[in-house]
Image (cartoon, rainbow, N blue to C red; front, side):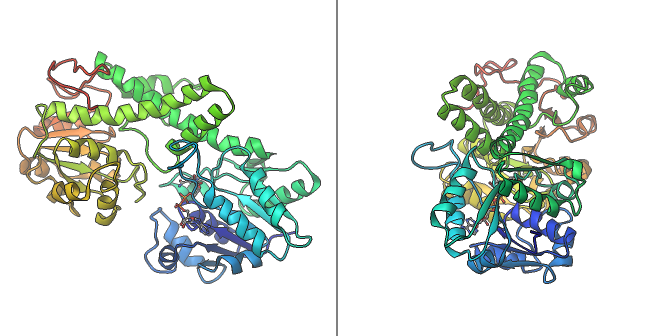
Length: 487
Ligand code: NAI
């Protein structure tokens, strides 16, 4: 069987870019991306796409209306497709058993039930969403129990490894494509069929096949290892601040060891994004369910260190600003969870804002790709702050210079390249003195800023003399006995 029609359920950060690239590389395949969110589909069909990713717009514009379509007609497109990707969200459960840790599979299950209910021909169903191990078995069971007549479904696991901000390049030149399936004859045939789609542009040796459970677990394992690496360097950054070592020098020295490698060794305000925390928590829950409490605790620490790093950064700001930020204007540079995306899900900037708002700071937030509406909505979430407080204390500003006017401090929360090239003399002149910069991403020219007159603080190193930034985990600041760590 060769694939002629693909339906992708879920027009989000994964479904949209992934299937747009498939459409680009496979002009002979008709690809339709469906979603129950009509606004999102309308945006995909407009000139202003619902997500920002470098190069995405060009690809969508060149294929849309030819072999790439966006639609809300979920059932119709399922009926017509030979192969269906399930790319819906699998958020952390907010209720019931496993609340706060397990992945919520209700959207995946809803897709499986719709596919079972409306299908009139054999289909390959591909689980692209990140799911706990054995989710494919549940999908297969639902399909099997509800199928009409003698329709056959094969369920494959094909996790997505793209990173937001570089999604298109990751999809065009993947490190690997992983396909897991049943070891039966029909399972192997389905794996072969999906491999054929990818082999239109991915070298054969990069398409690897495994059993379904290895494939599902590999996605959780990959994100757990990546998140762990960030927490490891961030933990080391606290040691650097307490000792006078420089985390960049340490990262460089250890990264030259080929066994360690030099990627993902940048100390920061902590990881964000919709996946790392969710997937590590999912792994923790899985380990607990499998009666592996020590393994669960091990991975839980990756999350603990991330939370600790965010708090440490906010505490450092408060300590430096003479132990109070109440009524003080602080400028946040960046709100997205990383550069080159407008995605703010689980962004460290949200938590840093929360800690500063709890202390009464006034925030002026600038991000080149995040809308005011998004910032206000994220900060008004009941776990962060109240709409009244946000209305009183938060402004979202569309000009970085304007954002800094009469500000006590700038906190860099996202590593946007444009922050490196601003006119910091002009910024310094319009700020209150002493003017502080807290570089939470290690991207600014610290020496230059120092010579302009800024007091500069950066994670994992000492830049300006008389730093009050260093905070020990026991709540004591090394240099200032009056300072504290946020609860
Ligand atoms: P998203 O939230 O951006 O998109 C999911 C879409 O699915 C939403 O637009 C929603 O309306 C739609 N949806 C939900 N139920 C539906 C249904 N029954 N029928 C039709 N549409 C439905 O999520 P995102 O970021 O695209 O993630 C999707 C999955 O991919 C998740 O499991 C995630 O963990 C995984 N993943 C995400 C990556 C990322 O960078 N965002 C990277 C790799 C994997």
